[in-house]
Amino acid sequence: MIRINNFSKKIHTLILENKFELAIKICDKILKINRKDFYANITKANLLAEIGFHKKSLSYYYKALKITPNDPSVLFDLATTLYDLDKYDEAIQTFDKVIKIQPKNVDAICNKANALVAIGKHKQAMSNYDKALKISPNDIIILNNKAIVFAGKSKHKEAIKCFDAALKINPVDLDTLCNKGNSLAELEDFKNATTCFESALEIDSKDYDACFRLGVAYANTNRPKEAILCFNKVLKKDPKHTDALINKGIAYITLKQYKHSVSSFEKALMVDKMNIDAMYHKSQSLAEIGKHKQAISLLRKIAKKEKIHDHDHDHDHEHDHEHDHEHEKKHLPIKEKILQDVHFAKVLNEKIYQSFIQTL
View 1 (cartoon, rainbow, N blue to C red):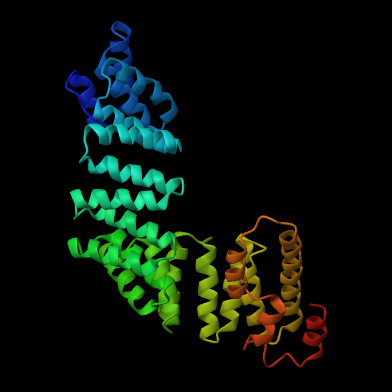
View 2: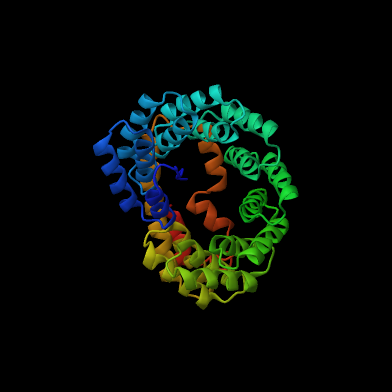
């Protein structure tokens, strides 16, 4: 946020009117007269950062700090700009300077934690979020940030505790409701996830991400018709939303409306022609309506892509074995998938499928 200074009413007015480029020109005029003017330097730095010229802004922050060393406000603005430039280590060092001067600066502590998350130092980040919460226990942003770190580590129960704490403070906070819904969905508690996303959409009916996630939750609680309505709203906003198209198709499969499901998957494949999920679910639908050659043609493409992936995987010697084990459990090879799939159960004895399966 741009800090308004009293040194120029004109700059003040221009900033209030969002005329940042004109305000910068006035800063330049002042700096021509006196390049060591503290407020002109810091205001120009903040204005440049505000309009996205983060790199250019740095020199003006450093000039301001030469004039007034260890100014906590300048240091904070510099640190947030370094963060925006992905210079996380420098940002952390600068936030530390702010915290040394102002040990209870919650924003500095929280932003330092965010930077620590960005470089993968989650334990240190959590420690800083806890410090910030001791100072400001009712800060919803900090509670959400802490919860998101838990969620990122797949500790969704711990994340939900943080989201619940935030919702006690503000039961209608949109971000918290959606974040809690996402964690509940990860735990496959779709019933309670549905409640979260419904509440979020009562607050903002145009939150299309919440609408999409509500559709997924409906689909997983055996409410495919309501799921389709959600996906249609999302697709009205973004007709190329691949995930909405695929999930809409899956909902139609649940309703046994296979022609509609094929149409959804075809639209998804027009956006992403090699989307494995769209191809596989389309093949299920085609098998159900007796279009076996088309179904097998898709399955053959998937198998070919799977072989290429496996070949590449064999040559990757630095992979994480534990992660791969989990990945294999979730993503069965195409042969196993077909043999266990109820949509192919009736046709597996047919020659066309048997000869295809023998090639896998």
